[in-house]
Image 1 (cartoon, one colour):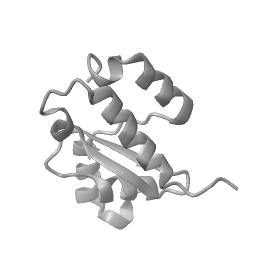
Image 2 (image 1 turned 180 degrees about the vertical axis):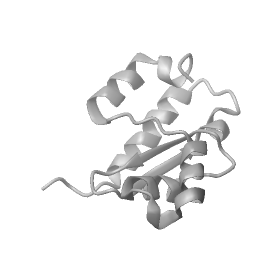
Image 3 (image 1 turned 180 degrees about the horizontal axis):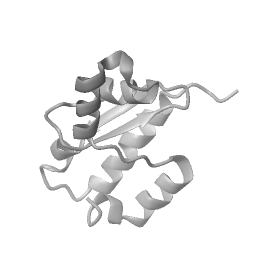
Length: 105
């Protein structure tokens, strides 16, 4: 993905200006959920688990500071077909997700 969507300067600038990046392996969350139950994981983990696609090894999720899932994109599906507009499509997904966020107080 870095050579495609994340290799695009406009996308990098947009991410740096609007997001805090967090990398979590779906497999690690699945193990924690299976070992501790859904009530045994943190509220952030519950939001991530609630929005993931279990068949996707990598998802891109947008989560508000209030821990509301605003968008979820299984990246394998997104990256599966070549598109010359993919960087713009990814930024559009991020913008649509942010539009769902409640206004800051």
